[in-house]
Image (cartoon, rainbow, N blue to C red; front, side, top):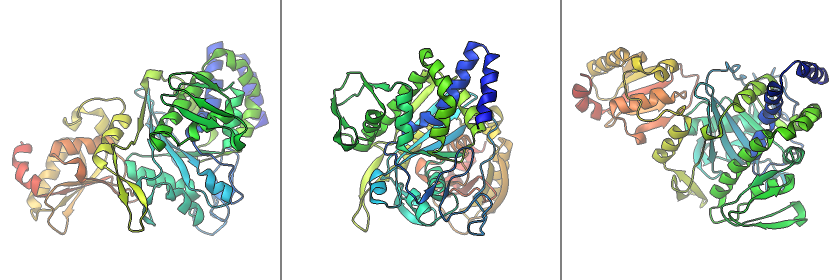
Length: 465
């Protein structure tokens, strides 16, 4: 790593000032900006082994890249980013109360950060920790239990990987990468860049660990926060909106870090400190993203205009309070509302419906979704006509089969995230949002399963003209 940065140092001398700025800002930004998204980030316990980047994080007793620890095959690494496709990273923070108690941690914060290099847009979606979701292999539970289950049962990739899979299935978009950082690295980085400035929109009481310094931040006033106070700002939950307010502060902090990094007077010092700072911070990061991929993404991130960064929070209008059989209060998702937010954030900035012939929609064509059509009305001829109709629109129908029973309403199941194709099919065939299901299984051999229902049998004569 030392030689790596020595080479970079020599390389810098041959670059113009702007290119130097772009490169250095990326190295720090891509690896550490996400730290602001991790609300309650903990000193990771002795149950966790953190490898310096690049590398795969492991839980003690889990599987290594070769599977040597258990004799079982390791999880597959994500395909190298091609620099063109939309890429999404799950940013996570861990529950500090678990850490203090010496327990296996739950995730306390989840933010999806997604970048589209074609449209030069980015988006952030915050996911509350109490959302009630299906966790593969464990049934339904709070979404923050995915990290715990993956860690406690030593699954391949541990907590981060099971959390990534769970969020991918729940939201219905591909999530290629994950990253977790400890709060010591977060504090260190914030202090190195000279703190951040925030302007709360409601009263927030913050204090440093141990109650050393306590401040009450008033709404509408801009404050300069050092690392410890910045951490307290994104951890505080005791406001009127609880976790939703905190999620918005976390997103505010991410953009505040970006703003601070883009200030030219910070760059000479950051350039000088880049090697040591990288060594310190990388040792506190668990991620499946290597340095090269981070550099690619960071270079892209700093090209984004602030106006092209969209923010969204799954708030209390998108969930209902629900009591489980065990008497626990959780947040049951209102899928229609969450899908609207997802489509707003993750559809590359496009507006309006995509229900046009696929031949005229580059986005749908480029996804090349593999679609299975099932007959859910007992009419094989209708299923075959529908498949031919979809193929004529440019949809890749790979199989037509019988559903094995009657279905009153047409259903779309997503096995591998293809958001444009799903939206196109839903609008083309009049499928209600409530009948679009996430059934994530990239090994299924297809991406979307379309089961024809009685409503399509009634409407198909008009729609397939």
